[in-house]
Image (cartoon, rainbow, N blue to C red; front, side):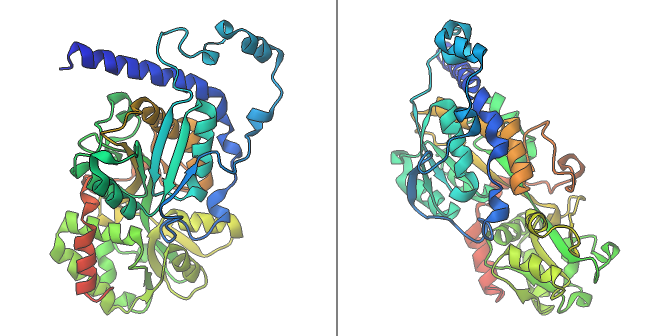
Length: 410
């Protein structure tokens, strides 16, 4: 049970976040006009780590949002002249809590600047919080946080996958999140110990050429692709981070022996090796291979560029099989942060309806916040039985790399 001091701090923090959310109310609605980044970019952050170690202001080089440039209405002008008429203009006026505008926030981001930079800038402009972002490879930034320990300047770690979040959490470097934030997403997509929360979901799928493979031919389990009828027909990307996270999950769910057998079985079927997810999807569409193992959104991004008529289809396992893994991009607040209010406001912003809709419609990832609609072409999350696993346990990448090398896959 919280003591009086802790309870006061918790209440003050929640009220302060509500003030920030009122500040953001006007800005968040403009997220939908952000450019379709993923469809215009390269192969995505699974293959491109971004500018490792680069620290930037969220507003550097950014364009103003349409809402920021619009002329105020008569009512808005009156409110601006009279803060008492508009609580959002003076967020501390009605509840006595501090105004976070002008506060600072340092984010270590394993998500690329191309993908999340505009949203972070939108948050900065809407909230008044000054954000500094260090972009880099998810695993390298996790290692940096571990090395820096209590001396890290980071307030928040925004990671590409749950395994890296788990590694930081295991070292006790995350603050336990408030219940009102945790409750924004399904418990499957957050830390069992409440140290981090998912922002978006990335489902593992089998992409297949519908002109060469009937859906009924897809094995009932991902483990079935070791059967000899798939010889010479498959593609995979062993150096890809998402693939390695899947192998880690397979080890956790089924054990190292089963993971080894699956790798050796796929190897025996002479799969074609690719550098990343997008080339696999392109090869499937070109008829060069019949099927491959990728994240779900790569096909959707290619379809958005090429239009209808491609033969590629996604098969998503929904039966609790290891193939039904949904990994997350998520974030946690560093335990030593002196800017917890600002960090919590950032998490709530990323899980707001408009930000989640941006991820769903522009990057084709799964929105994780409750009540936000999924892309119409995706299986709804509530219809997917995911494996019974704490995603934090995907942290043993070194064990996976050792297995991949031992089996000759790497």
